[in-house]
Length: 428
Ligand SMILES: [Zn+2]
Image (cartoon, rainbow, N blue to C red):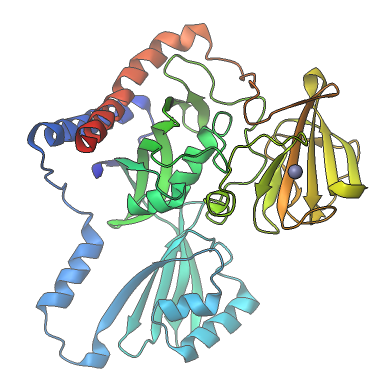
């Protein structure tokens, strides 16, 4: 289920978000009451292009122009990607060669939606995408070669609501719901102090999310910020609401508690590759080992993150642990990360690290039968189960902002409440 409501990207003030959310709530209200959804008018540009292709008979096949849109996926080579976009081999080779010299497509990252214009022979006329810095980046045909372009473009922000249920992995479900990766990753990130998305997900877990989607000329080009979200993990509901000004802000529970925790629940980077990995490999997820650690099956090379701010206590080879890092944190807590294939470059004993910093990569060094991360959490000399240990939270919202926050929460929660009700009705 996805509904949308349009507003300008530049309107970042809370009153506009409120207006948008009220719109969403109205749409959802209509849905709940009548059981049907009047789809909001689709974004303009793309649809019009398709209509023209249908209604105007092609005068000359070769003159026909084709727009194609694909997402650049992790693991794509430039060549395989251009092939998927329908660019012919000659132009593909030419562009790759020219890009090697000019590097005009360096802003192309996995997850980026790319649009190309070709003729019927796959001759590349233009290729463009919106970069992480919200500029339009691409190449245009110029004579026999290509010229790079980069320009500021006006983006329109649309507030959307989506919900889904986990059957195999978070990404499988968010793909089904049409959520961009940027939004799925934010959901995992927002709850990373409470939920271990590698080992803690259960079949039947559910989520709802209110988020911004950015459009350029009517096409969805980028997932924006998550404004509010709920995740029901193993029967327990977690809610988060964004509160702040511009880019300064954070996620809080509806009661105003900070969602950010002193420790991340999982030391593994959450990504499309690692999502669902444990579900496939380890049927006994979440089992607390008698050997006092937790094992995370993950592909070799997966990034390992410092679960909290700290200093490097030791780094190097340690018998059965193989390549291992020990971090020292406040309150006499140490964490250990073992079997790494390698360390983050430049990491040394005594260095300070921040929560989320990459400290190394998953491997199978030491006594390991396959690539996995062995993770230990100790208080003094005592091992604790990192899957269940209670993590202290960061500072709550200051009391003088609580009234404004509560008012914001009431409005932002309305669509989440409605989504929860719809999920219940449809499950019955
Ligand atoms: Zn282990």
